[in-house]
Image 1: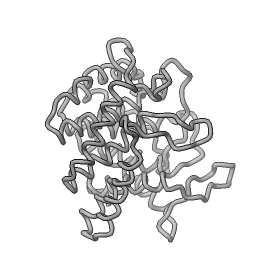
Image 2: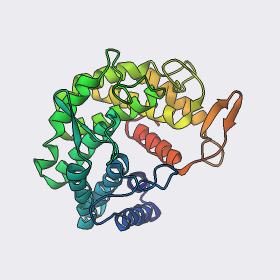
Image 3: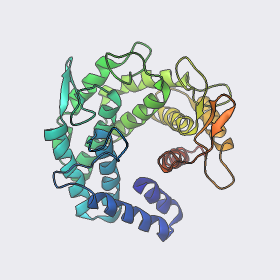
Image 4: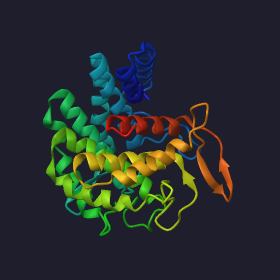
Length: 300
């Protein structure tokens, strides 16, 4: 939400967006614990958890706020998280690489937390000029290389049955790696990104929706379609392949699902012919970020 409001301010120069970004960044800093962590939202069954996902995305927002406002306390909070990540969350050695831990208390190996942490490491190195934030990057890339499947997919979790959300997760992972690559120029992620993009191209249905799974077309979840469109357009922009047709198809389909009030239902055909008409702030924020990314790449 911080990043999207800053993006909107850059486009429209309306103070509301800038003020919203600052207020959100301040709120993120205010709820950070003294050790640098943020607690997982109090979802039943996860109360008190500390996860890489929350810490990374909070820090990505704070680095963006630092770049926009020049306020060092935003950058300091993101640095504190990285220190917590390094010494408390940690990594696991997998083959010849390092996989970021999902939760502080768990040892599950989930590649998508490693891709998003790579992006944060690149942002911190770029914002501070300190290469220490890239010290573990090479090992994290090696983990991703070793875990990528022959079809280009990065599995949701290693050593487990295939996960149904294969296209959605991999679209976010490609975008993470693209951000990392654009900030660092690390050619080691080029081939994995190429293979990821080719895999994702098969996730766009004839009408433009993101497939629900590798084996099932429905239900249709709109923010999945958005991130798939953005990832494929990003792949095209980087020269990983020509996915303009697939991206445009997904993008156009997403726009047909927008309501008159500007929002999006969560899903279609979730329960046979029924749909989930509710709007969830988290997923609406994701769709907005995806539409802005497509705008940046000339799709709107």
